[in-house]
Length: 393
Image (cartoon, rainbow, N blue to C red):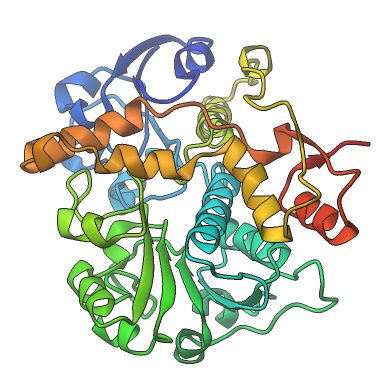
């Protein structure tokens, strides 16, 4: 059995090597010739899955090791009878930790106290649900928005400090009330819940002036020109941008004014990436009717920071930032993003963006670090645990 796989999927050769012969290729460069005689195709979001790629091929299963599916022509796959899967939820915790790091970083750099502020979370799926939990841990009041789930009668996620779910908040009410707005929707272009350019001029005009705006979902959910106008007018005081319209190309004028910028790596924790491979591998086994036999357990690296002591002398948010920063230096991501050779023409920007993603350093999630918080006050201990760290016994 021939398997074509994107080479930036951790452990993909080890996992799919149990099923056949694996050919590893650059995801953006996979062509129709590469997959013509392939039985399985597994990639990330940089490979457009279209008729031009798959017509005339032998592919009988496709898997994407990402939560997003906007790179896939789903009706085409369904029409061809090709089973497919995504890895929904694989990197949800990673994205929520990215948002946590961004907020704590901005809070400390700009003397912003997060506790008591209001955060509007647009999109309450796998990612948004975890952002709710971490926002509550930071003392933020949460306004959740997800019209499709609301219409289905789905309950809002509960936060640890409430007995009942927070009521759904219409966008028209969320925007003017929120000190922070963060987007976690899929990119869709049709239907009443289409999210393409959801954040347009009208969206930004309705925002609370001086707010923090975060996009770690998909670049085209935001109209870049509208965001730039909102920043020029002071409506958005601080923008955190992980996903960009047109990526791997990106707008340097937005980069110049963003408070924090990164190359679509919010979900790039080590766990977020390898769990995508694991989930696609298991679905491929199911489609083939074979039992999965491979696990990554023996291949996992040790935690970068196995243990750390919480500082009892710092205010709560400063102490949390010190812990988070020790595990994940979001400012280093920002610095690497800005280090474009000569500011760069389009080919240079695209190469720079992809190179940062391919060479992304190992980032382990909070739960793999044990925090000694014995000398800290109980509220800080509760916040440390709620953010996902493991407290020492």
